[in-house]
Amino acid sequence: MRSSALYRATATAGFASAVLLVINVFRRAGLLPETTLTHAIAPFAALTGLLAITGLYLLIRGTSGTLGLIGYLLNAAGLAGAYAIEYTLHYVFPLLDGAKVTELLAGGTGRAFLITSVVLLAGVVTFSAAALRTGTLPPLGVIFYAVGMIPGALRNMVPLPVYLIGLALAAAGIAWMSARLWSAQEKAAPLPTRRQVTA
Image (tube, rainbow, N blue to C red):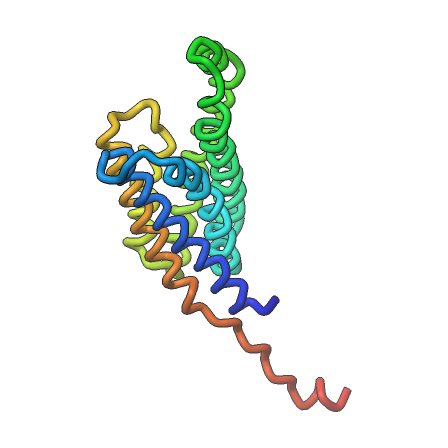
């Protein structure tokens, strides 16, 4: 796949992630009804976000250095973990009784959720710092993503309004960065020199 096609595919995933985040915000705020559909699509905000972050990293990797690679790996791992958490919350926990859910959260499952939050938080901050340093992505978009994902990663440690505002900011940041990703073009290969042609 050509780079420009890959950028557009991952940008599309970013736009989808932003839309899904906004839907999640509206649902949690009571502005959208709690339906089977709104619950079913909720986990996919993290999954499409993972695809978007991959495209964004590919766009900046030439100038983001080791910091960018570390940030991407942590951010990607955190988003993959967030998808697993959301999938569990929406597809597994509703099938269990409350006592069993409490038992799981008090044990290894709860610890895994906490570790995922820490990894995601570290990844968001590191990736955003690397992205800002490159100057390739819109600075405000990166800042919105970073600021919004901090309460997003700490969902159980912040008040619900702060969490929802964070998700809304993160959605704006992802959409903004994805717009830049959509417009990215594959760099043309340099023309061969006379010596290369005659060699």
